[in-house]
Length: 160
Image 1 (cartoon, rainbow, N blue to C red):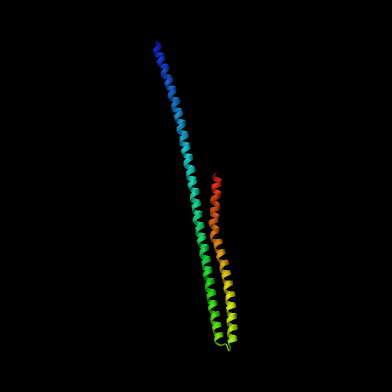
Image 2: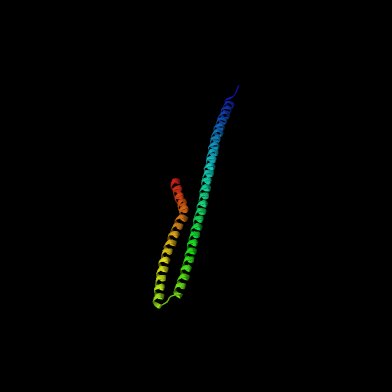
């Protein structure tokens, strides 16, 4: 028969086995929870990186759209300037011919005054037209960038 010491030793071993099983169970739970938390963290990080990549792509697209609008505006301004220059030179040549065929000083003064008035009115109209084109170009150029800035603000506010 087993002695009291042997029985106590068997009970201690049983308790140690139970404690070891509890420790193993708790360790397994911690490991499972840690793995799940790590997996969730990685998935959130990947989703955030994907969102960031999409946002960056849209930013580049906005910059391209802005540059395209700016190029179109510069092209329009250049075409306007060329057309104005050609018209101004033609009008100048026409006036020079008229001045050279004038029959009196009074006629020269009248032709010169009419030319100066016409040239100034045409110039002011052209400056206004160029100003409108420039303003329109700037609005069109900054529209995509403004939209991206608004999207960024909305994204930051949603993240709070």
